[in-house]
Length: 70
Image 1: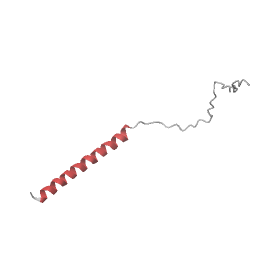
Image 2: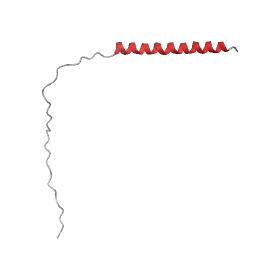
Image 3: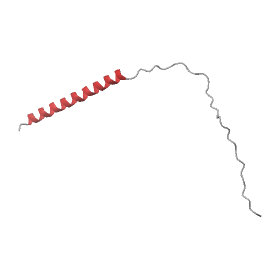
Image 4: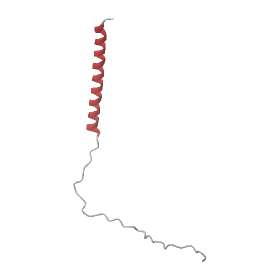
């Protein structure tokens, strides 16, 4: 088997793999560019602070001591 045949075949395989990978990367970048959601960022900043208040009042329990009997 001639050596040039193997190198030509390997070179063809490398070129094919490089073309396939570069085309997949190109397609991926195009899909990323055109398929992303266009969101509108609001520039208005809400100046009012949000105050969170609890609706339930937590009562502290007085500690009960057990009767000692003495």
